[in-house]
Length: 148
Ligand SMILES: Nc1ncnc2c1ncn2[C@@H]1O[C@H](COP(=O)(O)OP(=O)(O)O)[C@@H](O)[C@H]1O
Ligand SMILES: [Mg+2]
Image (cartoon, protein in one colour):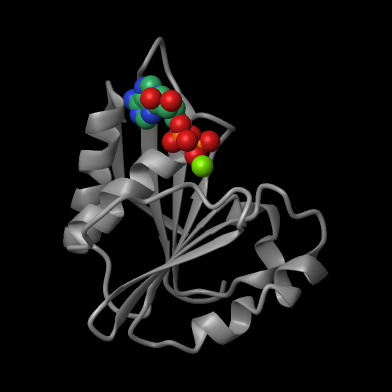
């Protein structure tokens, strides 16, 4: 796992802009992105920006209750998942998570995916958000290219 970017945000809009930047500069079809950080730190805001960067129109809503939302544009699908409410690995498997991964053109972003580290194998991106003073947030972008 290597760190590839370290960003600082001072507002929710700036966090969305970093999400856009992430999508444009780093993400490719088939990529998996784990978004980690405490409740309310801005994970969903970042995902809204990622969606914007991928050219998706319309509102991205937090999938905390529904666990998964899919957004389509042509034959491209953006999968937005949230594992906050899941306790067991089995529940993630029941979600059909692995089937979604078979879509090699899609991009998948998982809030709280770091709760189940053994389920995911590289290549993957890990984004860590953490609180600073007031509305400030630190955003670290890691990339894991292969095992080891
Ligand atoms: N710099 C910032 N980046 C992102 N969100 C921020 C920031 N400053 C304040 N906020 C607020 O923090 C909250 C983040 O919510 P959300 O993105 O749903 O968090 P999470 O998905 O991590 O639980 C929003 O209410 C947002 O307005
Ligand atoms: Mg969220």
